[in-house]
Length: 57
Image (cartoon, rainbow, N blue to C red; front, side):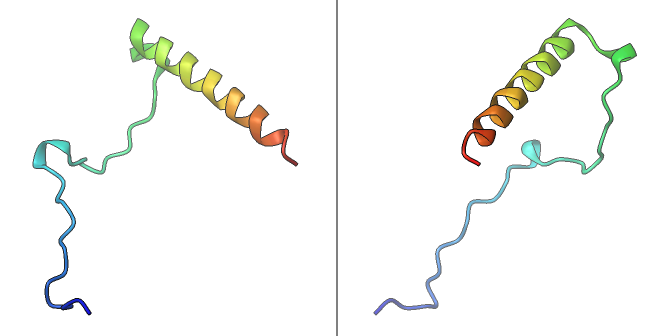
């Protein structure tokens, strides 16, 4: 069988991709056009996802 001392290591997250851990709330007063489009896409995706899960009950 395999030698357990030779465990494969998981890849580490590069420093530039790590989050600072600060949760920021969305503010409509500071949003630009792209932010509003992203919110609309997310809402549409949520509606689609909810309608798909409701069909399997």
